[in-house]
Length: 445
Ligand code: GLU
Image (cartoon, rainbow, N blue to C red; front, side, top):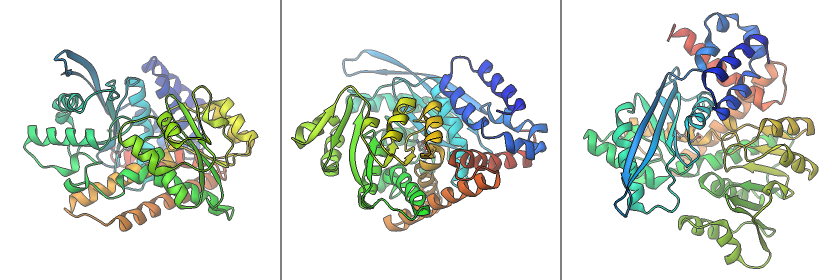
């Protein structure tokens, strides 16, 4: 890392003690920025990097609710509005017991660059709660969402901050959140949230967009070497929204997806994942172990062990942060894997990325490869603003174009900074310069 950037990184660590995921995300970006600040002294004199590392606004609030037994429960809510140079704050809400300020900040920080890469007018933010929707009744989830929105509504709006889903926040939660926002503000403000239902302001393809987009990105990487998904063995970690639609698109393009997972282990299905069965199980909030049981012989459920032990040509980590470590990367390399693309946010550890680099695995970071979700959210905002709704095919082809242009922008930027084929450098530099130039233009904000 360049010396002036080391000083900024040290300041980030000192100002945000204990927030290890945020430190990791910041380090990864700052490590790419050496050549950029060397070429653009104006960024240094305006302290653009230091300002970028400090969120514009951070909100933490109490979320009390009652469970089905009438007992009072308590959670903590967060919204970190990181950067609004390019547009209203935009980014999802995560409901998971692991959520604390450091996770929200890492996600919000990543979101700034990801959203810039989409080429659409959206700033970066993230929010959520340590609430665990797993095992809760619909009524409990509704009461929690209503209490959460009772506080959050003051800070959001179609021109201010537009939340959406992330881990633990899907169509059901967005419905409760939107319903309560509408009730307490007396405004049918469609553009205040994305990921809405199709009959009340949602966009076609939003549900599929993150997974589809990741696969479109990989298809672009493959095309460079004259290849395609046809006949490739693919491993997709996770079994949530991102994983399911990554599997669907990879299969549509001719890939053989042989494994997926959840927090209790992975399933290995040599014949290829039966996606209808997996979707049915997940719709009923079941586990991948149920998949193995129902699918019968030939399918293994492995409780202890890493899904990255399964040999594949293409690996798509679509579960959560730091799920693929250095050892996993070594196993992937030894088994001949040639592409890793992140459907989740920051699923690869820094050591894993180092190992992949050394082994010649082509690696697409999440802020580029999984940007299709938030890009389609921006398309949902466009449709809401014009009170229109587009067809599935039209929206999917817009998503395809956006992923192609992100891919090409990453490669062109990496090339122009002397780091050909480095998607990490390309994504970080391209996202950064767009935001930095807007911040310079707007003066000291
Ligand atoms: N949570 C998603 C992401 O990580 C989507 C955010 C959004 O649509 O605003 O990009």
